Length: 176
Image (cartoon, rainbow, N blue to C red; front, side, top):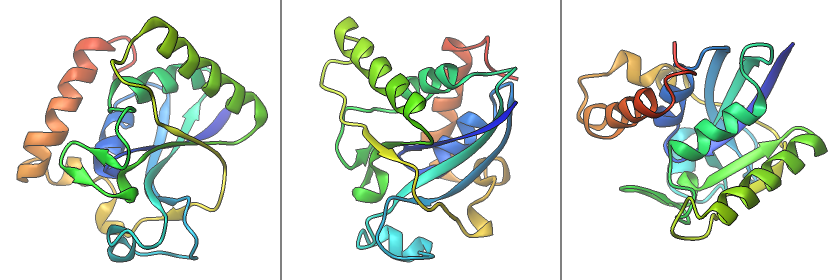
């Protein structure tokens, strides 16, 4: 069965590049969610005045990878304990958020976060927002497949490439 998920884990170039490498993920689309204006653009979102966060829409085959697997990957490949920040990317547009599609997903997210906190996986409390699905605005074409098209760019080399290497080391069973 084909399903969709929405994750905001900082820069969407990073999040997109991670989920593109997951077996069962059919498509990853960068965009914006959680704001208060319609059809925001990259510059508006980067100014931090629209309320949107850089988000990816993930289309996946539930028979190959399930929502719980995607949650595991999401939490292991970004820092869910920092408010409005991922590394040097700072601002509300880089906040950690999950946009659920139904109450089953919401409950699964809440239980997963609770388990991570009980197990003490992170030193600090998880601050990932849990929001119901709202309008998703697809990012401009130049943001699609960014890492794969710009691997030599310094941001890609120093920020994204290490995340991909971490993914391959820790979660080899999910990667293609």
